[in-house]
Length: 87
Image (cartoon, rainbow, N blue to C red):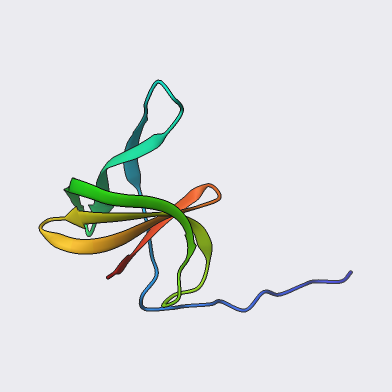
């Protein structure tokens, strides 16, 4: 039997997280809060939404430039998973 092993890729800038989001009537996804170290942090403000690649941590998807807990953060929706990285 052939077994394939995939190396574990770890990047300290890429943090997968649980996100609470809503769909508006036009089908747009808007994140409301993220889970970080057993805390739920609200998305204070979204300033930009666009398709983009993450240059720090790799990956691509829809990038939400937003403020979470008063800090500028990039929140990415990469296919079906969310991750964030410090701006």
